Image (cartoon, rainbow, N blue to C red; front, side):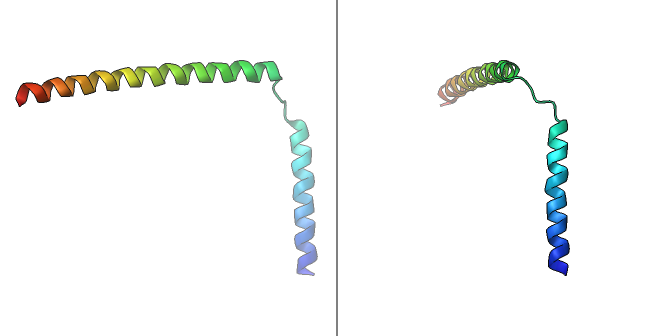
Length: 69
């Protein structure tokens, strides 16, 4: 009996999940592609910015070590 109740709950959960997914407004592929491009551009910008900051700080550190030694 407990096993039957469990099966009923699982089946109801999948049925409710399906009905909720029908209510979702899915984005158009062109919009998704455009937003993905924006995300890649922003990540690339910050990747280059952090790389340049790291490069500059490492060069400054090398100069400081040479000056002190």
